[in-house]
Length: 141
Image 1 (cartoon, rainbow, N blue to C red):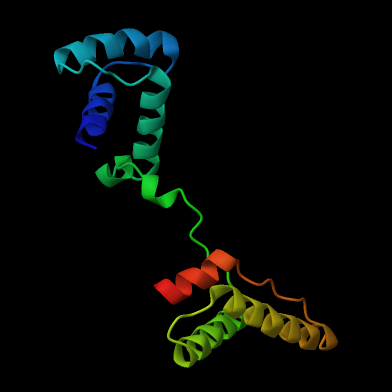
Image 2: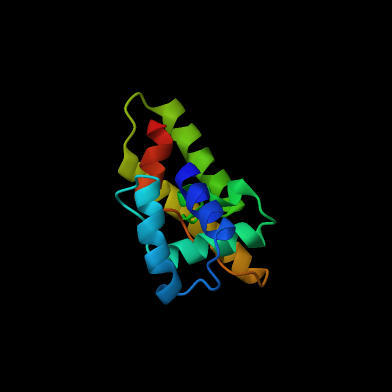
C-alpha cells in the first residue's frame, strides 16, 4: 500500500497534465529510478490507482489491495436444508459410533425430497440439496 501511495502522491504532485501512456511512461521511468523501485507498475495500473484514490475522497486506505473481497461469499444452502442437514448429522452421530456417510447422505436426500414435495404443493420452488462433500464436512467439522 505504501508503494502505491508513493506513486500516486508522486504523480499527483508532479506536473503530468494527463494520465495517458504517452505522458506516464516517461514519468514512471524517472520516478521509479528516483525511489529505487526496480519493478514499477504499468502506466494503466498507475492511472487506475490515481482514479481509485481520488474517487475515495483522497483516502489512503482505498489503495489497499482487496484480494480478500474477490470471492463469492454468499450463503449457498437454504435455511430449511441447513436444518435438515443438522438433523441428519445429529441423528447419525448419536446412533452410531462409526458414521456411514453414504447412508447419512441418502437419508438427507430423502428428507429434502419430502420437503420439496410439500413445498411444491404450497406453490413454492423446490430447494436444492447440498453436496455429498458438504454432508461429510459437517460430520468431520
